[in-house]
Length: 185
Image: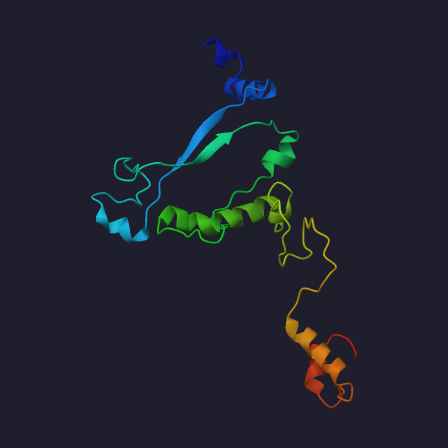
């Protein structure tokens, strides 16, 4: 075979060249959904990963289209650092009892932390595209500058506010407060 023998990445090259030429590949995107209450009502196991759900029983539902309209500029930053993880979901989406999915929920995040570091969700390719707030501070590969607050228990903050509101109270009289504060008030 001449095409495959001369260029082992001929399909990738064709895709890249088509996108660069403005001939964007496009697919219709469908999903199949199942209510958890229906799991036991079929003559097949819908959670068996070796089976395909019959479309006459669980019809395909169109959700949109997928268009590849841009080639990546930096292969490492936009491809090699991607970290997919089914544990990160939006509110309103729930997990099924699928054993394979249940395993991937915790193992993918662990793999990504090992491969990319503990702050892999801050890497631009994985970070949310909207304003967000999380409890990630410091650490290896930290991509965010966080100086608006300290990242520890609010108990100390409440004690400081209490002491400022009642200046007549001293730490000498309440030694246990002094044990919690890393500085003198």
